[in-house]
Length: 152
Picture: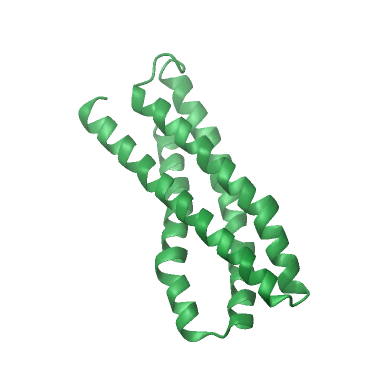
């Protein structure tokens, strides 16, 4: 059980922490220091690397979460906060899948062919969806911590 919990926690830290770093720290620094074409090229390189880690985190979360649910006796035996966590996680995965398969692929294509205006518009869409997922991720952490603390 300890291995599943550790894998689960590390995966959350990678995904949610990565979004926090990118949104709160990296984005303002990039805007402050780089011109639009360089910004867009940098974001393309960052997303390519980060999204690979997110896919790994999602796989690890699904494996470790399923393992933990089984070890706790199945979905009908887990606490209510686990059900909420699972719902929020599915929402986050759906948002990320849309970001990756729709927004990011179009963004990367626009950057490759140097369509800066189109790339900028897609980056705005990605930024807004990352804000949604970061909020969902932080909410999920709060639900779990409070659920564990208060037995909800």
